[in-house]
Length: 116
Image 1 (cartoon, rainbow, N blue to C red):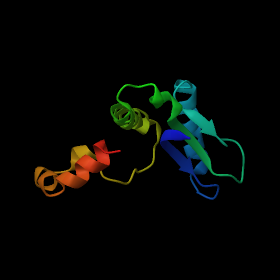
Image 2: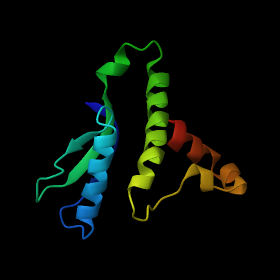
Image 3: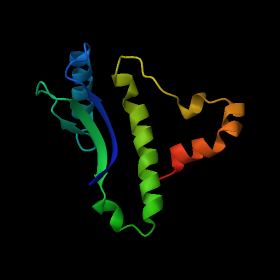
Image 4: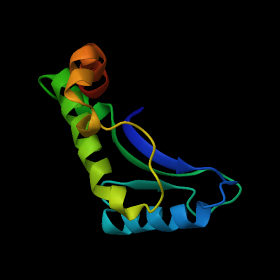
């Protein structure tokens, strides 16, 4: 089993060729940390993965901390490749949450960003 994040595109998405091109760019720029899947095979879903095997965390003294650090690095890496994709990203970023929101949703924010 693996732990990580991935981006994927459906076979029927109208902008699929553009997304696949962006995925290839990420893979070509960072082949040691991103893993492709089905980037040329149709009619399959295509994806790129930023992941580690759970085995890699077992040797860590503080496994929970190691997993948390990996997820934080995953978020940073996602921010790094974000400019390679020229389509509107939907979702909420922690940077765009207002101070009142942070106070109101503190439990949710800390759990979703730092929790495992």
